[in-house]
Image (cartoon, rainbow, N blue to C red; front, side, top):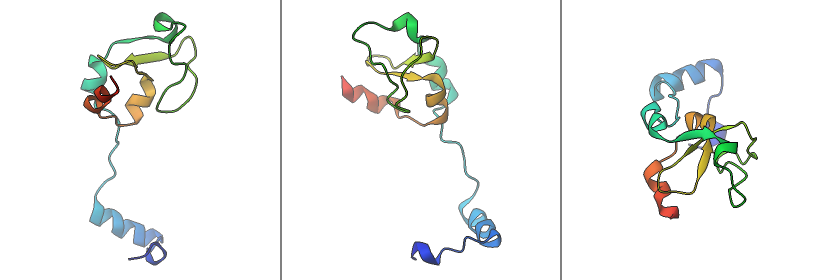
Length: 95
């Protein structure tokens, strides 16, 4: 089926939802986030630190809460990990 053939009417979208099921949030599970070391950016920053989040690509502010993945040099905005699902074991490839 082509995209142009998709019924985007209200009724068509309701039917699609009944077939596909509810959309679920894709954030990183809370138990994983809770296990990651957390600090403010200013607490961990050094001259060689990354200055932007690899998820949203925004520069870190001094008071941004950040999470560090163990055995990895990446930090993330806490909110970015809550909103976006990240496969933490795959990040260990970067070492």
